[in-house]
Every structure is written in C-alpha cells, then in structure tokens.
Image (cartoon, rainbow, N blue to C red):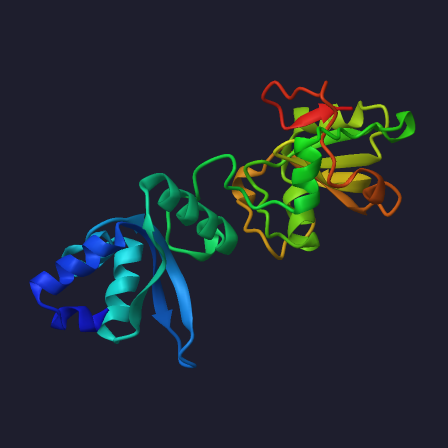
Length: 256
C-alpha cells in the first residue's frame, strides 16, 4: 500500500483500471508478519483507498483502528479477487465476510444474498431436496427460532448459550404447554441446528454465561432453560428442515 505512493498518476490509473471491480481486505500486520483481516470491501478504481483518506478528521471505530495501524506502519491491503463485474464482486465480498464472521471484522453489515450464507453441505442438500424432519409423536416438543442470535461458526457451547435464554414468559408458556416440553429444537433459517433435553426453567441470569454478555437489568420476567444436547434426538433430526407446517407468526417459540 505504501509503495502505491511512488507510482505516477498514470501508473496508478493503469493499475486500478486493469483491476475492474475487485474485492479487497484491510490487514493488520501482526508481530509474526501474518496478515490479520480487519475489514473487507468491494469496488472499482481507487475505492480501496477511500477508507484512509482524511483519517485525522474521522472518529468512527474503524477509522480509529486504521489510523493507529497506519501510523505504526502495520496496515496493508490485500486484493482477494479482481477483473470482476459488480455482481460477482459483491458475491465474493459477501462470502468472505460470512466466512470470517462480521463480528471478527470492522464491517458493520454482513454479506448480502440468500445464496451467500455459510452452511454445512449436508444441510444445503437437505434444503434443496426439501428433506423435512418427520418428528415422532413422543418427540414433539417445541421449536426455538434463533435467526437473529445464532452464527454459522458457533461451537456447541456458544449454540447452547444462544438457545437456552433469555426468553419472555409467554414464550416459556408455549414451551411448557407443548406435547413434550422435555425437548427443544433450535432452528436457524428453517434448519434444525440442535435438539436439547430440557430439565427445568429458571429466572434469566441464574446460570453463568461464558460466550454471551447479557443485559441482566432488562431481564426481569425473563427465563432460561437448564439442559443439554439430546444424544437420542440430535442424530435423528439435526441438519434437517423444520416441518413444513410449522409457522412462527412472529413468536420465536412454536409448538411441534
């Protein structure tokens, strides 16, 4: 990036014109000389340089980080793909953001497009082949929709802490009144991500959370469940689609 300054205006014009649309990554140069991604974008011409223009007069979080790294000469730019059209550039940008995770970047929004979502290949196959879970009568508990909270890169512990709480009293009432309140099916984008065995419901904040920061002050009259992954049901239903007839009508809890 720094050597771009040494190019003549004509050389810079030739370079950026040749790129057409491209996808770029702002990198933090770590002590071991590895290049840690901190921001991903797409554009054409000199778009990738816009973020470091007039940094002294910018106060947003991303600009402050870039300014610090720039002054320390620990900031650089990588080109991920080039000679693209605009639509392809947006697709590549979105896929990269989804792969790394927007929470690990200074990007404000995640990738765009329904086909640009990180998903295990078996789940995607189930989606295209419309393999809906056929849930046995004795397993018909309740569904918890976690579209806003769950991330595709979560491990088992992060997923459990996302699913178990914290929920409003009316949602918990739906769970308790289901045919088999012992089983909770976690759903993300219509896919069963996990099945949990529920032992009890307790006031929100009763258990310790290690991967989430909860606003306990605003958790009055909210609840969470105590439970674990069901070794019996998980192999049967995980990765399949929630039954077609299940409708949420805006509530994150649904009876099965």
